[in-house]
Image (cartoon, rainbow, N blue to C red; front, side):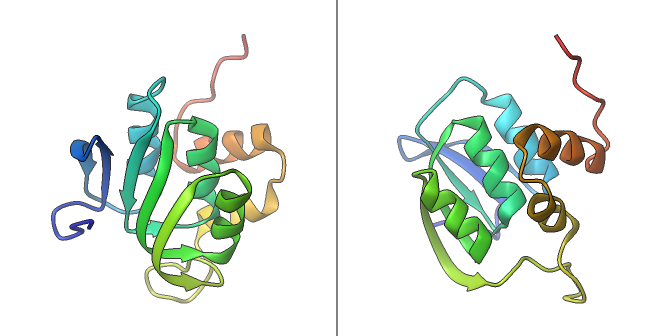
Amino acid sequence: MPDFTRYSLALLKDGQIVYCAGGGGLRPLWDALEKFQGRSGLILHDKVIGLAAAMLIVRSGIVAEIHTKVASRPAVAFLEKNGIVLHAAELSANILTRDQSAVCPGEIIALGCPDADEFIKSIREFLGLPAKDAR
């Protein structure tokens, strides 16, 4: 079982933690997925999985299974459609901001970007990452 008192995100391979990070939002997930590009079959423990996280996970191709405290219904549907096993303690309509006053920005971006390339461009901008070179 995930130990979210020790980390907010962890990647496991063969039952061993190969990466863990603290912090919230999408940045720890983005960094983990980038760092382990080219791997496959990893298990992800992440406190919250919204649609933006689900889209990043599917795009990466490295995660086979996810364990989380909370997942949004759009994320559940997207992961199921893409064959990724999800174990969530709770489901919510959408992922909300910390103060519960609005849908989180990542979820809004994901819901508004059906095109994968546009989604990645918008998330990179949201995270303050430089635009990827067109090659």
